[in-house]
Length: 310
Length: 150
Image (cartoon, rainbow over all chains, first blue to last red; front, side):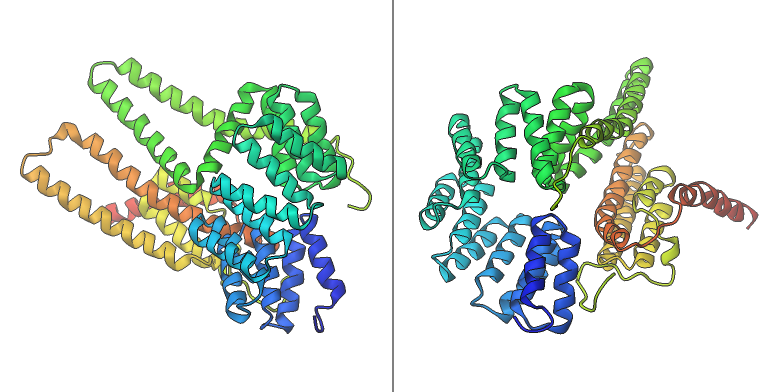
């Protein structure tokens, strides 16, 4: 790549992305784009960094520019497909990922990304084929092994999932996603302490890793069920997206108001008042819950000793 | 520090950037003082922040106003026709509040993304609770006082 985005800084960009420094990666790509605005490669890279920073709208915009500038660039289709998946436009996202694979059919990582896309959309058979193809091309593709573990996990095949995670860990004992996957298996089996160790070990490699942090939160939720309830509710809402949160908020508000009115009108003012107190209790819990829960997680995080090179 | 290339979802703060607050506070103002103050504050906040979705936020408010006016006209007609009794009015109020909150929440969700980016780049924010006190308590009383004098 030409000046000023030298090979060194491109390498730095990927390292920033790998270590979760999404803001640094965005700034690297932005600086390079200021000098080279017509590079599809740079727009694709910026799109991937924006996706990692959970800015799907901007990522989609950048990936669309990249595709327009360089329609034959697999990275542009990869970024576009992932951005569409993040926006829950699943069919279009998968079509873009399939296009990326068609442009570079011998690239294991693209098959793996396509498999991950199928996994998100719960198309298990297609996910299995794509991930197996990724492994055929590159038998050392550890991410594909972990994805196969995730696939088995989602299908309820716990033993097979663990086998894949352990296979990846045998090749790379500090593989982040494999550690997190195995930690999840252990947590479900009730081995809370070992699950926590896996989360802490993963965080030693990569202090910002979302999967490891989520695992640590799940461990904390298992240890204190009352405060953990807030975490479970929050996770459930996040999985359902903004629509679910909105429906629950408005629905809860309506239910509270209507039940108060109905009970009072029906001659049960005490019950109406109890509903009011229940609402206040819920409000207090949702105020205190996150604060208390974060304190618990912070106590665990204080034990993490990040690797020197990180 | 931002370089030369501009990313589409980034806010472009205007001259009132110093009074930008976390968009949660206008949402709370809608709950406490009603849509006139809550939506108004949210819109002002969006433009002061230079929110990437400010025009969409304005559209939400426009649609909210239209829906409220439509609902009030319909309710007036139903009440005149005798279909709607006085006993049903508290329930109607709840439905209206739900509509107002939906609009406020939709604005909040969009503005929150821009606010987060604003903070990431070191943008400052004003005191939200103080703003809530002013917009949610002082301003309504002030306006009602002025109305009383006139």
